Image (cartoon, rainbow, N blue to C red; front, top):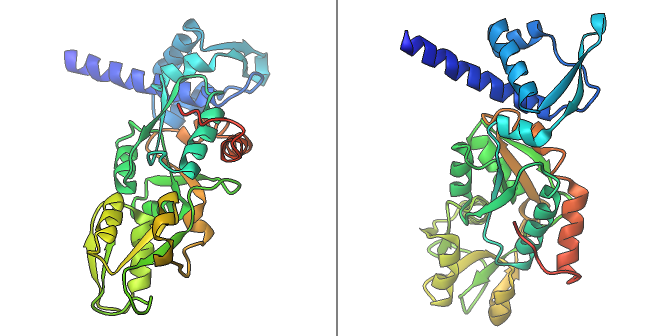
Length: 308
């Protein structure tokens, strides 16, 4: 009997959470789905649905207005309460550490946009794309920011992931360039050594494309370690972003085909669709115009980066 009661309580809690998330996406004046519609949507009983709506009203999440045959409408709502009732007491995004101007300014723009969110927002900075995707898969991260190509690769590998926004007026990073330690010639040829990070989906993808059809030794290292190996002379080539430190070895860097392709330079936002309704919940707050203006202001040095 205790086990049955516990299971019913757990199901009621889950239904309460799901309905709260749906209602957080609504506006005053919207019609509330009927009890029958909600029971079918969530495969639940009328009693659990009615209790969930009653609890959300008691806790100040919503006020409902019954309009006879027209149905029930939302009179007012408190999104902070609804987010919290939906298990979202805070929102967490992830992206690489903002160690270059492009990423620092992008993080600032996103932080600006998320100020409108009804619950606190913060970043968890994780350098590896693979690890960011793993964190997103465990749903303690609500969205991940990366290059468009990395987002596309991740979504192809993991069907539960979805690109919800491509920030096409923002910049994720400088273009990739090819660094050469060879004294003669700059082209990659069989027998050469090149480092790449399998966890950095964009760099690894471009490196594999450049080495296609050649017998190359690919030394797998974390992205930042590739630079150290190259500067120590242990590599013939390296694909790396054209960042500020490159000034000291500018003579060794050359443009490469595809390195400035927008899919490597534009940011994209990815969510886990198993995190119920997260796309619709985030959509009003991840405003492209606000993010773009915030990034532009930092890049133009009209303000300092401010990162949540």
